[in-house]
Amino acid sequence: MNRITRTGTACLAAALGLGLGSGTLPLTASAQESAASASASPAEALAAAYGFEHWSRIDRVDFTFHVELPGGETVDRVWSWAPNGRDGGAVTLNRGTPDELSFDASVEPEEGTDLFAAKRNFVNDTYWLTFPFQLLWSDPTVLEVGEASMPISGRPATKLMAAWPAEGGYTPADVYELYLGESGRIAEWAFRRGGGAEARPATWENERTAAGVTFATEHHGPEGAGFTLSFPSLEVWADGAEAPEVLRGGE
Image 1 (cartoon, rainbow, N blue to C red):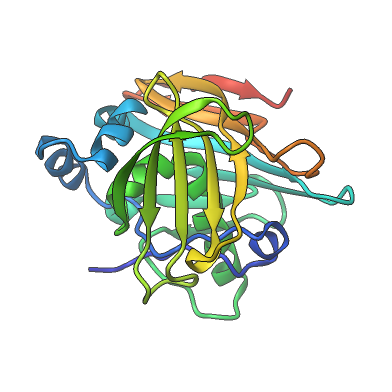
Image 2 (tube, rainbow, N blue to C red):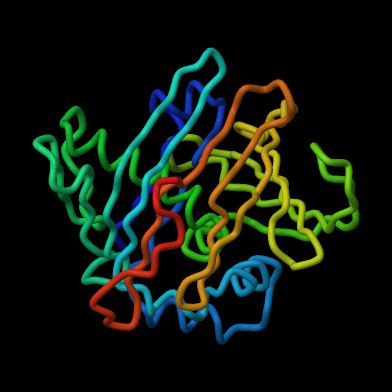
């Protein structure tokens, strides 16, 4: 199988101290249906809470990935992604601009090229956008730990642990601690690069839903951390519609 791995060593991930483990992007609707038909594991239950069964309805997602870093630095990338097309779908960075780049999500570009850098960033950004589904598209071990307090708010939660293999991918052995709220969706998480002791927490906020699929559009670090990640623009085409559902419009 052509494997698409996530990366945590690009400039953004290095600045944030966030990893992207080893994983895959969706390839076929049949693979999604097979996962849904299995008995519900913690990963399947979490993906279902975000509308995984409806993902095959999505024709295209246009979104802006925006990060505010400590010290005032910002990162912005604008993407167009047709996830359910042939072999994982077509991807375009900065559609309609002079620096537009397009590629097939199933193909690994030659290392050192502009397309290779774009592909790495795309995998990073879509992990933030669709992380609950990546638990099924990817290969982590996901276990329910039990009741715990959220790392930022201190509220009670059900805690899951998602751990990636010690080999493979750009940042092997990454661990995510997932803290679920009453909705069964992620309220906060904490990332531990390579399974290390240092945990970097962030919130999951401002949920928006289109075609049955729910996206968390804002993530904030603890007070004073100086970190915010959001999707200020998010448009979803689904069910063959001629116009998108605008979930966020660049406000």
